[in-house]
Image 1: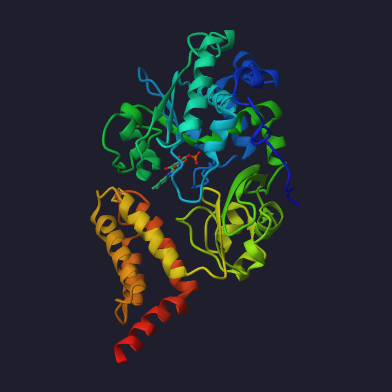
Image 2: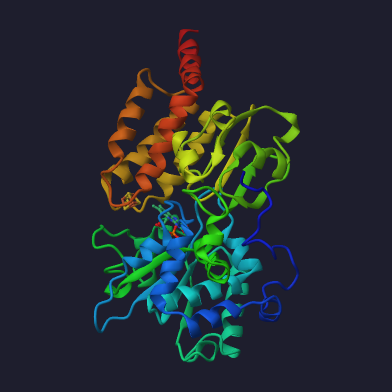
Length: 426
Ligand SMILES: Cc1cc2nc3c(=O)[nH]c(=O)nc-3n(C[C@H](O)[C@H](O)[C@H](O)COP(=O)(O)O)c2cc1C
Ligand code: SF4
């Protein structure tokens, strides 16, 4: 049975000065990087990550080692590693904790990963609003240059690595990996068509790996303890631990590390102190606001792993668990979500640009008593027609939740229409 208390990433969250070089080194920091760089072959590092079964923590859960093995290695071109620290999905606030409390763990993960990939320049694309995480991370990078952990001779091993911290400017879409690359290149954050995939043609046209902060923060532990040991946590298809972000109507919202595969209700009731005010649970968004919403019946036996949440018709996504109590108006929740996604659409493709705006306006009209009969069917039809017809998945990030709210809480949406009909008859 997966444990509730296993910690790989959050051991020093909340500990004073844990973000400093002295603290990190005093607790065994950079020993693993030194050992790996001086005694392992790069491909053996990738194999160890493959063995661990680590899956990307940015949303899609793609196996990290497998992604690394796709990196093209053409003659005469540099390769890059980009760390996605944009973290803008509503309900998600874990990467900021890593960078605020333990930035050296991320840097050590970047050193080992860069070595495995043959990268000599790595980037962290950090959300512009993350002030303290950025300050701590940039200070940590500076300390590393001063101590010979970064630069021309990393840890005295002869390997060269530079790390560049780049601040975003407040666009959700720049968390999408190819928009992130455009933005890093100094252009407007428009997602690119794939293929070519970034592993073949990424930053400045060169092979690039993009990984989430939490994914890479796991790397030092995996190389220190072995991929097999990592697989000892979690489930067969979802190894390791996760930083779950619990928010909404709970007594103790926060970031909780636990093994993949723990029961959702244990996370809510034991870690997060249960639903606020002793109220009944009404709904849970399991993996950030773009994932389909679940009912209490679906949550009752749900285990938090990629396969468990997928079997319930949703996604583990970015680990953002949003809890809603019995007083929540699901129409208002959906209007709020649609306002966000229509505002954040980059406008590059018409099904997304027009569709997200139309969904938001139509839902808002329903909320304010201006809905029309038959509109729910039209919303479902348009939502399903927006999916898989766009350059990136942002359109689906708006339509998947929309369809799930209508499916599970339809009576509430119909009640708004009914009220309107009754008001018209008076
Ligand atoms: C609209 C959109 C926003 C995204 N935002 C983020 C983000 O803020 N952070 C992140 O790590 N991944 C985000 N992703 C996923 C990335 O495109 C990419 O899959 C991820 O960074 C890969 O890292 P991983 O393999 O380590 O999970 C987003 C995807 C989309 C479509
Ligand atoms: S789906 Fe939306 S956000 Fe993505 S590229 Fe098209 S318009 Fe932009």
